[in-house]
Image (cartoon, rainbow over all chains, first blue to last red; front, top):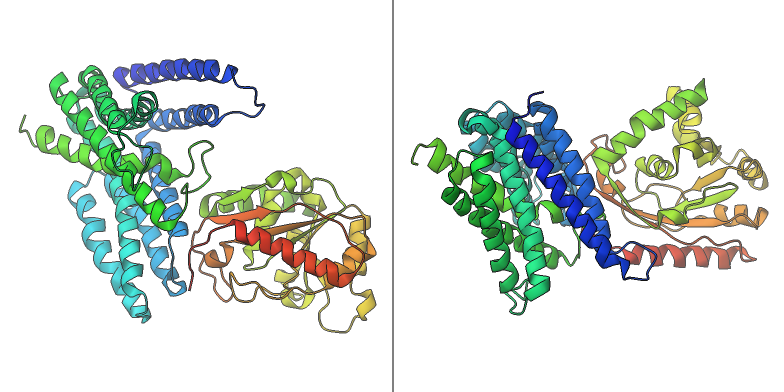
Length: 314
Length: 212
């Protein structure tokens, strides 16, 4: 176990932030008369659990971190497959789709970028319809393969970028390593969710995409994005090899990508006529509700970093 | 020894596997009976139903949990031994060799011993995720012990994960709705009507994607 000092300090900072948030929510909630905990309290409680588990997972050992990220990805895929209409004949194809999770995260773990980046978009993309066709049921074929492939991309391919970041960062991210890169991404993505929510609650007026997500506003989106970019400029030079202005740009990209991931998953839920994707995390909903922003932010940030910093363009 | 084996099987294998491979979303878990005697009735889609239901109650309650199943299905071999001692089923003889009025003796005795019986009144797993008509055995059992509370449970998703006729387990999240318990209301047919109404009400609380 060797945790880079910047990562350890950043984690301590996150816990400090969490303590402050817990205090604020406690103050807000004190005025309420209801005996049961409010949704906000539940949410903060779940944050404690999630951050504790996440800390444990990234501090111990990289193999454990990768397995942990793989399990998150698997749970997201399972939630997705349980939400969408499926055909009974496709049980075998679904099983193969699940098998893609450990394989994809294995490529990430050994740091084989070239295989990592083609395995799902090329090999699984060609393989799954083949298996499906061999079963011989053409009724609903397009819908089945379309929904399945999109789900596999959204929950496994995109989220596996977090694991790739761990491997990649160890060779190209200086002292803070892969853990620093991953922490930068995950912390800013989740912080951005909270910042956009808070800005929206306090100042939100003009709906940004009312047909998909009626509560999202321009004020929330922009306020959150600026706050996230500022925070990124502060922590980026500490957790990554990026100087402050590149960190701010990365932070802004994470904020925008996170927003798009969020509303994309909202569109899916709206189409399927469900409110939450599941009930795994009290106050938050399902696992897809929590990682929705990450599905966009993780690949966007990794390829941004890869292009400019690993590719040596900066 | 066998009790320990049973506890270990549920604690080490059944619960972790169900948690990771399936994941169960329970609504109103607090309505499940904690003390026997009690009857839980549920719809039947999969072999996993019994295990899933048994995992929803605290591990400490395991000795009390008694799923009722047909004796002929599990047979006399190692499978039958396993079902009887490790799963802890109470066998019901469907063959017709046992006179009708004696069929429920075992179940009644179990209730008198303070057990929590798990019944699948559909009788068979049938078509996955489709409700079959309920058999009246549960009403006769409730009639024999009219003070015992009956708790309806509706489950969805396990029939997708492991339907009849396959050993290929595919992960799906399962939804479970626990209803409020009630007691025997004086006659068999009204009891069955009540059961059907309650199960239908529970089923309508969920929104399930198509599965065809």
